[in-house]
Length: 206
Image (cartoon, rainbow, N blue to C red):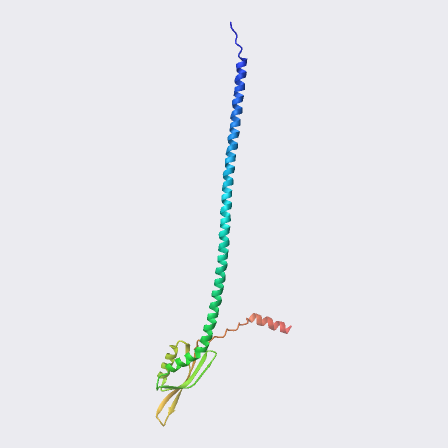
């Protein structure tokens, strides 16, 4: 009977298996290293692109900052010019206002039916006194004044009958108070509450 020694073959297989495992491990490690290198390169490329975009955005922001500063300066100049124009308009209005009011009063007077004796103006209040043919003429004069652009309100202060016996006429004396464009109402004073008054009195008594 022939005997064959298989030990050398088994050892050779073991060595071959070990070599395969080592080669597979080395290849796996190499592949992993390659993947890591590729990932690092991609990440580095992405970071460089992000840095470039960030620099471009920063430049654009600087441009916008200068633009915003210019816009703010322009807006400031426009507001200053508007303020100056409003002041000039107010001065022109104050200068030309009385002239317009006199013209409006003159055009509002019913011809040959109403005569003015006095006209005075102070702080936007215009006081007119005169004589009319009748109460209807006074009412017409008031309506004409209320339609005037520079007169806000017209109030009848008093009327009085005037009898001219020699001419056999009954006339109406009147007084009107008008508020013009220049009238500014006074601010109401703050009322002191009763509790505060009582506290003040108590302090004085003490």
